[in-house]
Image 1 (cartoon, helix red, strand yellow):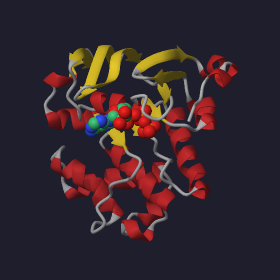
Image 2: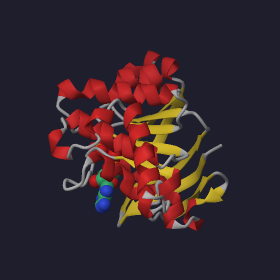
Image 3: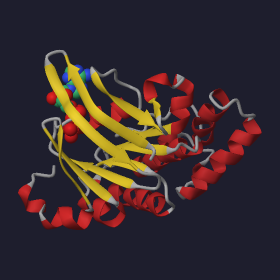
Image 4: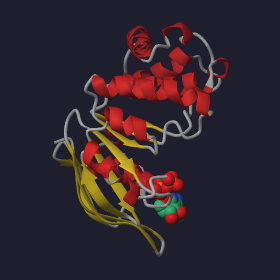
Length: 232
Ligand SMILES: Nc1ncnc2c1ncn2[C@@H]1O[C@H](COP(=O)(O)OP(=O)(O)OP(=O)(O)O)[C@@H](O)[C@H]1O
């Protein structure tokens, strides 16, 4: 078991956003998180990544409370891909990817470059290694963001609506890259409204509403009953 969450409660002031969430994620699992806007999906991811304090409950990563991890260690173990890629505009793609390896893992530039080129190959972007982010399309930028997360060789990668800020014509390539990662056995939690990604790559779907998990089941069963829910 990689992640175990018990009775997680998170509020922003008076607003209770997560109301006792229980969840486990197994190694190699692709968990898809769906649910209407405001149901707490992003907040759940941010809590798992250690980016948000919470009021009650416990989150463990590999049996250890995430609050007891050194921040640098947690960043290595939990990758995060956001809606926007957050690449540094003044750094070439290869340097964007190497930065974390050099700073956090204390690698030499040569070793970091070797890994950066390897992960860029995995997302089919090796030929863009020496370009700046502005020279890439939105979909390529997002794939570079995925490569940056992969470079750290995390135990799990969290995706927060990675395609929602993209032009519709660019969604496909990012989705396909994520399907490939899923097939490689990466452990992933993916917040998305993309039904075909969930069907193709998801092992399990959770459906959230008002800060609670209403359903937790395999995609086939979930989509048989899909009409019950407003997914987006
Ligand atoms: N930093 C914050 N301060 C105050 N309220 C917040 C903050 N972040 C989120 N919220 C509130 O918490 C609730 C859940 O937000 P969250 O972003 O987790 O939902 P979501 O399911 O990811 O929605 P969406 O699909 O629109 O991204 C919303 O009501 C939101 O307004």
